[in-house]
Length: 65
Image 1 (tube, one colour):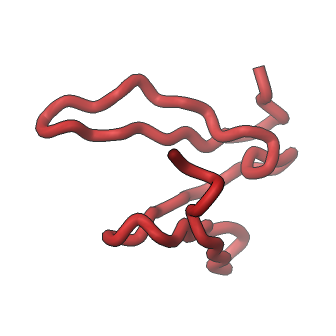
Image 2 (spheres, one colour):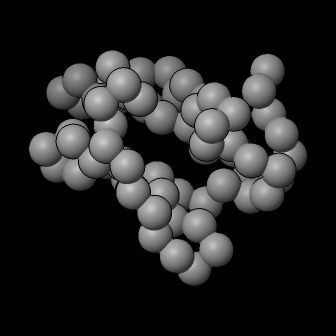
């Protein structure tokens, strides 16, 4: 288990009307604080991280299969 404390972030994939079992993000994304929200761009190239009233982003290449 890679839980730190507070709220942790998960990802789930949709195939039609069926969602996969949620997978917890690893320690690169789950921190000691509450991990608020993550969104992926429609083209799946960027991950947006909403935290502490700010927005961070990174490319998904190498992060998400």
